[in-house]
Image (cartoon, rainbow, N blue to C red; front, side, top):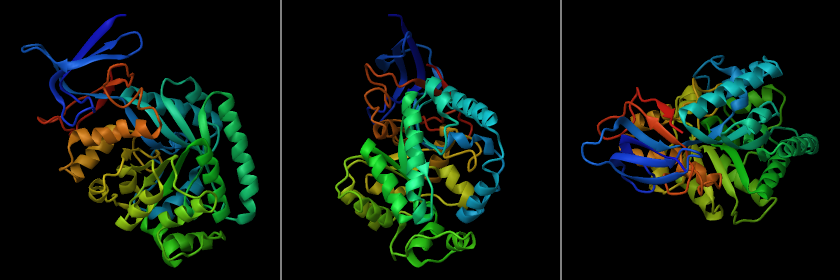
Length: 395
């Protein structure tokens, strides 16, 4: 076994709340297994920057990489959906696959070791099959009309079988309240629960809330104008509606890993409702995507005060200029400067690994793990990311 050693001004093990100042990480050069971490001897030369475990991108749509730089910003969710419908299919299959390869390679070189990815077709499957990055693929379904449910579920089950045949971890998952009939939302959630994992777009915009609470707003008008059915007006939040659709197929409590994505309109009442029945709920935030679409951020301070298990995702290149986890962290630090860097890094790495049940391998610098080692440059004197920080995979 050949042992290699890297050092930096700060080493975030994510096993403790404080970084090691002028620290080192030793690893097996053959497979990246962490052997030891510690503080360098006085006078030992260290690289300027921070060493961190490989990231986990907790929410991405890498198959939408062909939409990079094609969308207008600030349109709101209804306007964003219109753009998706108009531009989603502009590229052929070969172009889509090539761009999936390009952006997964970039994420890997930037330090992403694992990803919870959304797929609507199989255009990312072969890239994922041969890529060093671990992915769990959530096969997202749509269908606003009740009579579509059986056909949609048959199609997604065939896609699941295709993924499993080539060795990709995958299962159906519901998209959101506003793109699905009640029956399809429940059926796809049930299929995900059976596999132990669900990822759900939850409370991404006020337009989504207005649709469920009062049957009004831009999204409601968008759906009606398109001749689509809308979900029932419940007078309550879209997250509570999702819980009702879970109850329809399986009584709680839920021990499966459930990822609620975006959470821009999350309230204390919603948090209490989710935590009362979900024993392994994670909360993904995608700040740059939220700013891109509707210039809003999730209530991070409320989420922290409730001790929620927060993860970080980049969303897609239709709603983001990059798939760069460090830029997401900088956005969070810039808007919530009181949050310790070690906590934000735990969201970007350890919590995502826990959601994917990969914490025994990924997420922290612990003896025997293989999380990947990433160097973040241009950190400040406290070891916090700055606007000019960039990440680079060491191993």
